[in-house]
Image 1 (cartoon, rainbow, N blue to C red):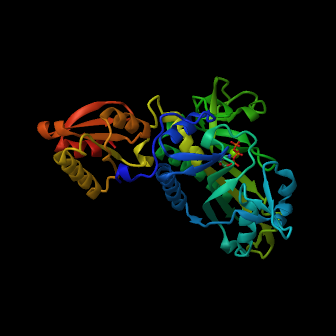
Image 2 (cartoon, rainbow, N blue to C red):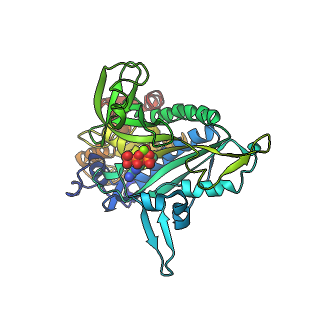
Length: 418
Ligand code: ATP
Ligand code: MG
């Protein structure tokens, strides 16, 4: 893509009312825009990152047999009365129309997915399966000061699994722990992300969260380095201040953000809707469920918090908006520079490498500062010097390492490094 065609621009300063690092950087770099507290627009660069995260998650959910669906946000009050959550969920947005009909704006989708699935499940032969979606959730969050980490409207992947018995659900649940670990590994935050024991609500002892260490988080966890897992502060007392796996008390306290959460729901939502199946003896049994959430914007914001530096954003290639930032210097005045930049652009593009080509007429310093702010993994400079020396200056955004390479090395380096 040509940077001159991008309708968004970077900004010198972050908005004064934005305190979170993730939002300050993302707004300055032109990835998101704030409409109001906790409500953000994804701009072309930001949406490219969000879609890459979405695709990673989609691949991993499809690998465990998840079937993608898309459920509505506007959800009838009756469904929420059935589970009791119309009256108990503090952060539920309620809307009514002129006829007086009331709806919830979905903060989660059990109240939709369970009645939906009920139409298709009658026998043990119809189970197990899982369905997931990417859908905006609405929650009346009291504090929305963490940028895109805590939205009032935010994108979530929510998956629901349906089973004949607890053992089957637990086997799937265990598998999901590995699937989630892979998602966070692919997005470049696994080194700081810990499987965390958290309160399970009334139906199971624990749920499991995936918590990423960052000062921007709102949670406190206690990490057992021996077992490489953690306990949320909310249940640490119940755990007698020890690791649930080895019993060790050598725990390290950290501030973290919850990027994902998996729950054994068992019959919590299937029972109120009477979602049941006939077992092999023809007896009615309640369906057993699990659910599995990941906040996409929260994940994106967490990557920014963890990897971003004083110069700007730093993207791992797996989710970067582009793989290469081709910075042309002087091309507006020098047709040979422009032609060389175009040649490199076309070569990368034909090799399926996504390139943002800065073809604008700006000073080198400005272009470099902006390139650092946007955070594309590899910067390649084409200038008059390139033409005389035959060498391209490249910079690895994450390490800051700069080197001069010739044309053949340029392509080799990209492949070996990323
Ligand atoms: P928190 O405790 O941080 O409010 P939660 O436990 O209420 O989150 P869940 O209901 O478990 O959240 O939602 C599943 C996932 O959705 C979370 O693990 C998180 O990644 C994401 N998420 C939850 N609330 C928000 C929010 N307000 N903005 C962005 N992402 C969110
Ligand atoms: Mg949670």
